[in-house]
Length: 569
Image (cartoon, rainbow, N blue to C red; front, side):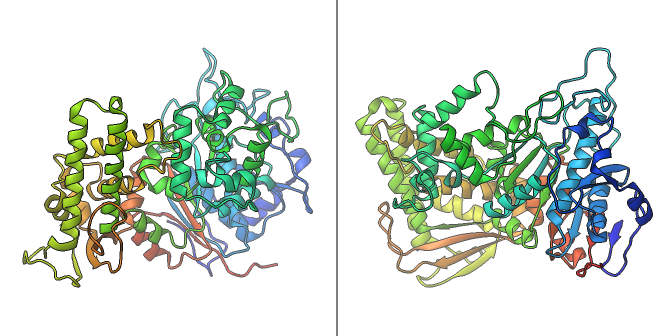
């Protein structure tokens, strides 16, 4: 195991370099690009100290300044994990430049992989910004020698950099701007942060000091989706027109032009992207998604990786096999992973579902052609009946799992995880056998509401969407046996809700909340590892004790680093 304790520096590992070799390989920036066309496309930045090139584990890493020992140790640990296709836990205190070290070492390794895979490291005019093309006929592709890498791939492994919040991602993008690396990249954010349509998201469209009332994320998401589906969003239409036959439009770049005149993608954070969108009258939200297909570095919030729907829709074009997943500021990662697999479903939520189905029935009466014959309305009435029954079940009829006795009006109870299947079966008649049929029809009801012609400002179906998400998290995507096995890591908690209204749908005030709580963050982490990723790198200023943290996440982390909390001069 590659392991460096706080008081055991410097450490040695396979491929490690000595202080002497590091200092001897440190060169001035002016000599670092000789004869290497890939290096020549990496642009230098002004710095108070000269940038350096350091050889670590046989890879030349460009760094904005001469790194401290803790920074060099950190980069060595990153490269060891990537070269050996292993997971890594990396702890380094705040202020030691974790993000900068992580970006420089990971991108240096990716750049070398690009040259190795293409077998054209010394071919002139090879640019990081141009789409990679397969080797010409008769040329020999270098076979992938690293374990876990797919054969015959013409793209280097993608790096997906995740942080907790949008503001943290903007800070990471700022660090990328300070490096000399310019990979093809994209920054993914929510519509709430990136939509600039004046009617859908007036707060962002008109700036932070807009007097308009801020809309909820659900309203923004549904408003944007509706306009895009009807092709009534001029911002998205302009984006597609500017892109033309190309897969993506690129904004003008202020970066110095590389040898050969190739386009160099500017490094823009979310605020910059919003400004570019306003300036060129294009949609920043869909612009960043159009860059996914060719991106080598993707910045995302945590939930884009932990949410299966987000992975299968937003990140559908991303090749996770052999990818590098980086979780920054991960000191609460286990808590986030558990919460991403949990849910709360209240009587009020179910009442809201009833209200949304009722609204769909009204739309269907106004526009009968929207339905699929008389059966559509009959099925909607059946769905409404099921939801009303489920709401009453939560309020009055839910029973103890073992005794079969009803809970009293103020009683709370905790049950094993498998009790959730009993709740859905007894309350709504939903089980594994009819789950797909039920969810498919609920989606059709949502479409009816979104497609209604007279519904220009639809708020969508947030309660039905939440109900479907609860079903997905409970039943999963596998077999019934797999769902039952997963439920062993859960508890079902039933709580009384006091003073809640009926949300305009059902007829019951108060009611109960069913909570399905995951107590094993390893479930979410293992789901990511099943995507056949090459390495998962988890880093923060406070991860110790690493053995217990590793055990909580349920993965093997052969590469572990605990850097000193005091930087030696």
